[in-house]
Length: 420
Ligand SMILES: Cc1ncc(COP(=O)(O)O)c(C=O)c1O
Image (tube, rainbow, N blue to C red):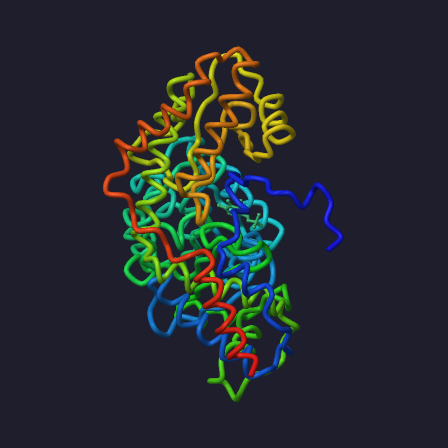
């Protein structure tokens, strides 16, 4: 292999992409197939069923993978659900809510924004006031706002959207696969994520779930969907055998399908609640350790997103220089703030394979070396502080997911069997 220093191990603790799950990594080595091959259709069928479980959707929901990142999931939903000139209400409390506003405008919707301060959650009463005033055709909001680390209370917002009769698009990019997502119970019509987030697959696919009601709405549109590529009715012709057989739509990225299918299977095998618990416990231990050198939670405990730990920085710490030193010397990649939080916080990823004590132990060791040079001598004690906090937070330790050599061997054997 033509590998340079860039191929060395770098610890990825950003809020996406996340370290690849071993099952997904193994699937990247599976053989190539054509996009109309029966093996691909069989694998796609398993993904359809698994995504219904992951999103807890109705059995008649249309689930599939869009060939693009999470932003395509966002844009495809708006493009399909909203017709030009229709009213779209976006409840926004951060960068990703604002991205929906911009997309809605470009799609020619009449966009109304219910804006909530970054770092605070969208509340049912506020949303109800806006929804009753606007009477939108579609409501869109983010479940876990990655730019601030806020978890919007989607279950509590559900009755508001139901009462105004709007279609509902929910961004589940930092939640589904790690935290409870109950599409059917909440009455969500369209939800999406990115393969590189809670699933720990490579970036490049947007797993989506669409209610039967939303699909009927798309099929009955007056104006064709502006994007041919992500027209859900066109996509359904490829993914489902129901409507007169599988039809070619576009050439899907086979290896991303293999890998994402395996990552979804791994998430279901472990169980979403076990995964959420892992994120919470590791996050608590990390926050407790980093508090000893002056980091503090940005977000109040009751609306804190467990998968993106957002911590304000110790007074006077040079954010950019510290993160550059961590990356260059310690080979640890961390994200700073985004939008209103830029320069004020670190956003530590606790999605998928990042939400384990081992990588954060390595971060503590790296910080113990780097931070004393930046005026934080107490950082030398961070590894011990983390171990003590983990011992407090952890027992009983969650069962580790079946990863490693045995799991890889099983995945490769399955691939070989599929190839026969
Ligand atoms: C909540 C949320 N929505 C949408 C996106 C966009 O996803 P992508 O970068 O995969 O296009 C992100 C990315 O971080 C996100 O965190």
